[in-house]
Image (spheres, rainbow, N blue to C red):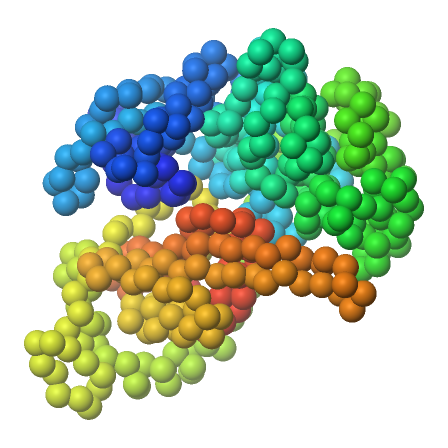
Length: 465
């Protein structure tokens, strides 16, 4: 196993290779950690029990599971661990692309929504409800096809008691159906479709339809009151005329009804007029992402010359950088006498050029201490709780968004929190990758804050891979 791809509440996802150098993603849970209790292990085993019986082109494939494995860390320490070996999905997360490069064209939305519906139909036909469908669990493979992941909250559609109803409140609040928020019994396949409608809206619009599917939410209450006209009027304010087609509005309105029995079934959705429109081909989608990557690279390349002078000025105040293998030594600032205590020694992991595509990263030729100093400065301004790893070029910080109300006392934004992990990865002797990861909390807030941090560090984004 090599670098960490992601971190969850009870487990880490690591990049791994087999004897033939084939890559996999391994979800590892440290069983010696007291916080990883029986319930956490049950979630892992639920995921395995579900995935071992599923095989679909738009679902992440399970390769292997071991409840009683041994995990040897980089330090040589061996710990008892449960692990799941999964196929490696390299294209990244759907939501990241929408959040950083904008909404998709209607034809691309249909392409992805049809793949999501195909996977849901297969899952539901096998008697399973996912119950945690959200953009973070919609991954893209190397050809940018959908792969649905994370079945830890999955449950039988028939319910634990055979009644056809589920009762546990779980999932991610922004994508929960109103009956879950109201702690009412619910049907698993129905709430999966509700979450799918939110995902479609995000792909099409570039933002969520509401903060929370509750009659108290300023946007969802309009749907709950049968005032869809006002709902769409509110969302159309900053859009071009005709941005939302009548067929799209009808589909979303009828998928997001307050009362579950008033919503469209999966068959209704598939047969809806909006679904019969033009759809992008696989080659169209691949070209779309190639264009998005090209625009990002072109913008980065265009900015490099402008930043050269600023970088030179900054270099005059920074210390020397000495690299030996994967260890970086930072010396005292220029003009200061160096002592043994002035040297900070931190190791830097290698950047994997064959790994997962990430849009929450950039490349720089700046010194690691400058990068960390600027990120720390940003975090301090935001009153974040910062933790710096003393041995590696890694940093975590927690950011909070306060509850926000409009002048009439209406709730506009819910209070949110997000934990952001930052790590530096060595590309070569001159280049460093600065990678940002969500370690906990709100993904919406994470991406919002990443964009602010990236803007703060724009001078450092001075090179490309």
